[in-house]
Length: 317
Length: 250
Image (cartoon, rainbow over all chains, first blue to last red):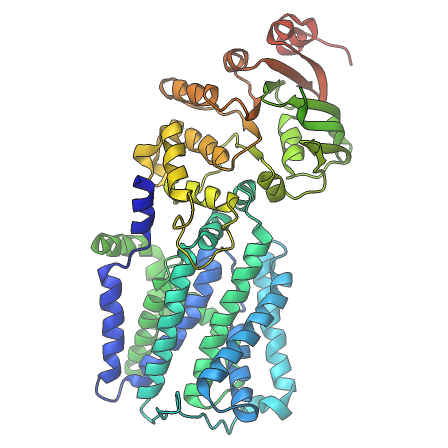
């Protein structure tokens, strides 16, 4: 009786969450001018959400998460050029392909300890980067993949120059995938991931098949990252090699760390802070914005996000 | 009576060190059996071999007549061979509610369910309440595990193992480090375990061993020294020699 209530309460939507999503969707109707950066934020948030699934919930550290982002971007680009211009079909296909890549690479990544994982994820991303570079007849190599004629969304909404449709599209996908992720982390499957992250020996002593669960969540996260890459490709109608750069893997890790791991909103908060700071700093101090960014990260690490989180948690009640 | 858990010629060598030496052992169904031995006798290695954390160098392990030697740890748990840990291995920032729901859900085969909410299906919530009541955890279900008093954490450790519906429960020093005031709760909880659960207690504390066990095995230097009724063990000269630190052969 008591447990049933508590378990139900655990999964309930809290009002700040609802307010957040209402505001995010209301921003679609905002005057033109900020939609391009909002679109970038939504895409980065989805990418960081993907990393949160493996790092925050399953405890798999990755320095090469851009592998899936970039793979999804190229997949969406090539599908658009050679299969169908329809963005939603392209997105779904790109996600499916990224999941397959996640499944295959999980077999390499999940062996060994954290340090091994760092190296292997990094290596996989580097390998993909070089493959994309080498297959220039397909990917355009260093010139990037050009000539994507992305169809209108659901056959009704064209992508405009100001990014309003793009933002609405990316935000909707982010929201849908977020809701799915929220369900997943609150399911028995999600609970078993949390147990594995904290103590995998103990998790297996409860009968949790640790390895299989990790493979599943890694493939899932790959699909999410692939979706983020596909959104970038479709909303900018262009894919360049930098979708697979190391910088992108590092940025998404920073983004997630800014927002905090293991509560799903960390990726979103981090993406807002990261992109807004980047935007502000690069316009006010173009030469030195990385300096301020670095300073911010050092301060954040030293002051401790936990104190900020505690504040948020108090509001959430 | 039939053996529910059995080892035949079980051995584990780490390089030149023989941690478990040809142990042939039977745990009867419904047993209240204790495994004792001085520090370094190989009790922990033996547990790890039983539960599948370590693979034996030679010998077999049987659970209810089935050879489980090559099964992984989690597969053994699902067949009902469950252990607790000497030092708490709980999920510090999860609540007892979450931990127990997870264990029960996993046992009911819900662990692959990624769509429905934890505890939404079947008997999970009801079982959590039952187990919480049995182990005196009902009023702390929503408290973070690492903020619980140590005695409650030890109870949760046992409760979580119990939630896996064990045929055989291996209790690894369940009362170690628990303050005197909370000890009673743990002894009571162990005494109140259902009779059909076969229990192997690994313990240093001789009061607990002799109040609980109907049968005792003594492990020394990785090998079974002697096995018998508590009275016989208490009188056994070899056991006394080991525990009183008197010199022994070899």
